[in-house]
Length: 334
Image 1 (cartoon, rainbow, N blue to C red):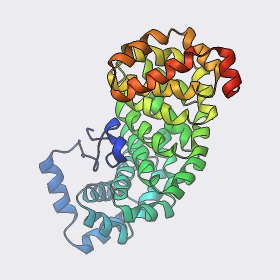
Image 2: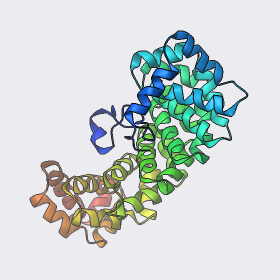
Image 3: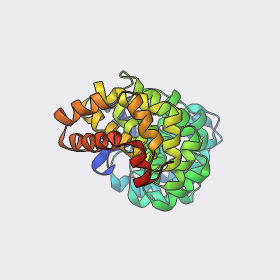
């Protein structure tokens, strides 16, 4: 089911994540999808019928209605508003608990498409979607899990919902998706986790839920297609002490030093920034970084990296070369 990921308006850092406007309905050809839209939606009475059919005793009827709303919700902001205003959100949310995988998938994707409209986010959250999205996130189809992550990402763009999502229990299954999902799911989970972890309590929650190990495994695998995304999440996590400790305990220093040596220019820049963060207030970490052989690749980076990477590498080299007793006296050891 080819479609883009959920990070299109992810501020100026969105280039580290894939873009999306809505699902691409990859199981249908464009002509088939257009035919379905025309047959399912002509006027307001058709929309009312689709919403009513979501509560039908017939599974086939429910599937057809959810599919119709999914396809219509990907068309335009006007249709997304009309669908939400007509009352489609509560029955779609209710069906997230369906035991039928395809019905659940259609409902998740319809809600994701509806969440692309800013005005619909509160409607979706108020209908109980945050808690209800946990079921497809944990046990839905691959597409349902990815689109549940995308919907949570969209809702987390509102600060109060970011808090509620973190407290709902969504972070552990997002980490599971990051670790075990298909590549699309991994990317969508990384995007959602990055947004959620802009909040301090969610950073701590993610670290305590074991996020650091899968992130470092992705960083250590040059074929993961997740290198920059994983680095972005690690970078935001090490702004709290718990994140720094977890990175060191999971042997993250070795991973980062290797990237400084052989990674792309952008990855080198991000990695030296992360190393600087974990060393800034820790003599112990500076010793560990030095022992890992960081100084030679840092010297090379200070001579040939990007302007930002050169500057950060020079600062880190100076920090690592200070006498340990001087460091402790000047900054306090840990």
